[in-house]
Length: 168
Image 1 (spheres, helix red, strand yellow):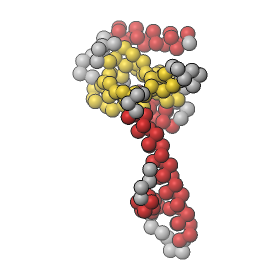
Image 2 (cartoon, rainbow, N blue to C red; image 1 turned 180 degrees about the vertical axis):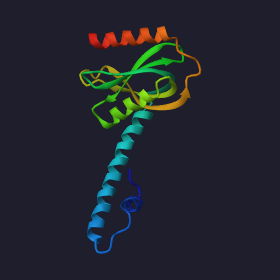
Image 3 (cartoon, rainbow, N blue to C red; image 1 turned 90 degrees about the horizontal axis):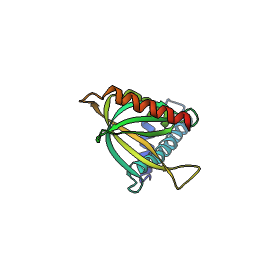
Image 4 (cartoon, helix red, strand yellow; image 1 turned 45 degrees about the vertical axis):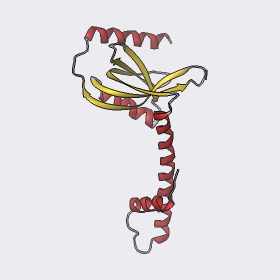
C-alpha cells in the first residue's frame, strides 16, 4: 500500500531527472507515468512477498542445485536439487515465457553446484485446485558446495527426471 503519495512523487521526480526549461507539461506527465509504474511495481512486489511469507503455502530449505531443465509444454524450469538429507528432488519455476520465470531459470543455471536457500511456494494447479505444484520463488546463493556430489547419483537422478518429463 502506498501510505505517502508524496514519497511516490519524490521517487518518480528523481527518476525523471531535472525538468528541462519550457517542458514542464511533458515533465509532469513523465513523473506521473513513472509514479504509476512505481505504484504497480509495489503491487507486484506485494504479491511476490506474499508467496514467500504465506505460512500455509510457503517454506524454505537448503539444497545444492544439481541441474536445470525446461519443460517443453509448460516452459517451466525444473530444478534438480540435492537436499540436506542427501535426497534428490525436483521443484519448478514460474513459466519461462514470463520475465520472472525466465530470470529464475537463468539464475538457477548460474547456481549449478552451489548451495542455495530455496524459498518455495505450493501453487494450486490450474486444472485441479486440489493438487499443488512446488514452485521456487527465490533462490539465495550460499556459495559453492563444500562436498562434491557423487556424479553417478546426480546423473541417474537427472536421467530419471528427464524420462518422467518425456513420459508425462
